[in-house]
Image (cartoon, rainbow, N blue to C red):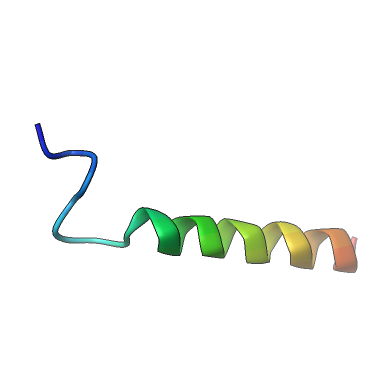
Length: 30
C-alpha cells in the first residue's frame, strides 16, 4: 500500500498549493 506517496501524478504538496491559490483567488475575486 503505497497510495500515500504516489510516484506518478501531482504530489500532495502541489495539490495543496493549487487549492490554496484557488481559495485565495476566490476570496479576492468574489
